[in-house]
Structures are given as C-alpha cells and as structure tokens.
Image (cartoon, rainbow, N blue to C red; front, side, top):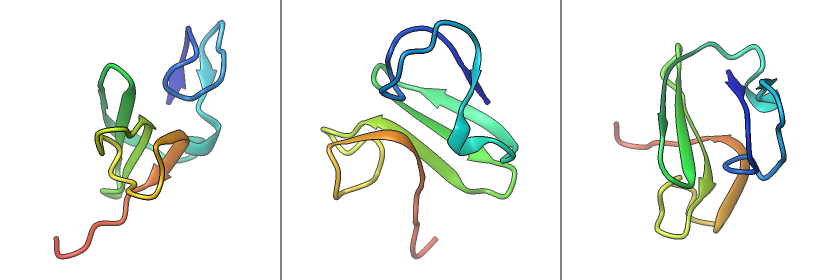
Amino acid sequence: MFVTGGRWPLGRQFDEFTVVPELKGIPCTQVACGKLHTAALSWKGEVWTWGDNSNGATGHPSELYADCPRCMVCSGV
C-alpha cells in the first residue's frame, strides 16, 4: 500500500508515493478512507486501522490517535 501528500493519517509527512512501512508485505484487497482515519482489509481478512480515533473510528479503545496501522482484534465474529 502506498500513501502520498500531507501529514494525515499516518502522522508523518510524505511528499511522494511512499510504502506504508507497517503494511509492507501484507497484501491489502480493500481500503476505506475517512476524513482523518483509514482502514485496510488484508487478503487474510485482517482489518488494519489508523488515524483519528476521537469518536472510535479506528476501533482501538485505548488510544485517541493511532499514527500507524494496527490490526484490529475482533471477537465473536
């Protein structure tokens, strides 16, 4: 997966297309982008989220902002 431009949602500045380091080697089949957060679905069915979590958008209850992709842990699915 590649990102470019601006600081959001990875908390780092990218001036050209750059591989998302945390997702290198993880094939993603779908990506959804909100205004301040992003979610990616891996081919294994893992959901990786990052960005603003002030309203629970990333699904990581212990943090307000996730500056790098983190795999969500789903139970009862």
